[in-house]
Amino acid sequence: MDIIELDTSDRTLVEEHYAALNQIHQDQTPDLPDRCREQWVDAIDDPWPGTATEKWIAVEDGRIVGGLVVDMPTRDNLALVEVEIWVSRDHRRRGIGRALHAKAVERAGANGRTTMIGGCRGEGPGHAFAEAMGATWAMNEVRRRWEAGTVPDAALDALLAESWKHAEGYELVTWRDGVPDGLIADAVYLEGRMLIDMPMGDIPVEQEDVDVALLRAKDVALEVRKRRRFNTGALHGGRLVAYTTIAFDHGVDWHGWQWMTIAAPEHRGHRLGTIVKLANLAFVRAEVPGLRVLDTWNAEENRHMIAINEAVGFRARESTVEYKQELA
Image 1 (cartoon, one colour):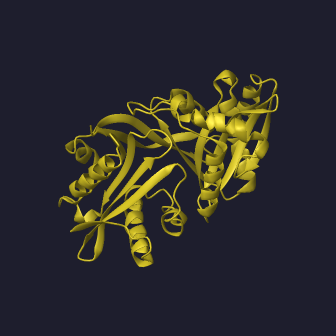
Image 2: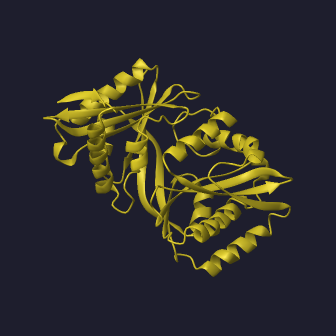
């Protein structure tokens, strides 16, 4: 068995890598759409802005039997490295995972990273493996799912009307894909607060270095990956003070991803999270009538956002544990 860096110029190998990775995904989460092909095949050479990524594969008898993805922030949080390790179901307990972990540690060290993080889903064998490798608990996360009809539309309308009673002086704005130029500076401020405002358990993070160029580069990257985004924001005095995003993988209308929802600290207490989330849901359902399901993730300790999501109709579906390993 050899561990080699994925040669992205070999399209046959890239296709094999996607098929193996997607099989693991289907085995673990059969209720989710396939892994985004546009990300893992079509845009495999298009780096995510602000992140350096390496992809390694374990090859045995000419077949890909495991893999490693190494993601390293390049603008901030320079001590962190996030890894995903996977081994095909019929090749487990043969030392392949350990070899991939050793490669992850090697690549982290070569890039000056001292804290490695990664997640394990559900009740699978990944937890015992992570602990055997020396990783420790860092954070619990829960995936929640919204399904059309879980909460009657009339109840959602009533919740929105009640929330507006606490938000005098605010108005809504909606847009597709990238933030409008006139609101981009406010979006930079809001997105830059994400890691310091939301609970991160025992993961040592610092504020992200966000600017207009980075957000626009992400817009381009998402366009390359053919992802559609629907956004609703709250304005106060013409300034964007809160917003939320729902995204869709290419070619998938029945399922969407509830991405971030954030409000500026000085505007909290006005139920803006509930308002923009409900308004955006209505916006999306009008634009994508085939939508049946949304999935979102929250840290288990993020009780405020969980309460909002459950009021909207999201229900717990699966749990994961984020692990961390100090390398120095």
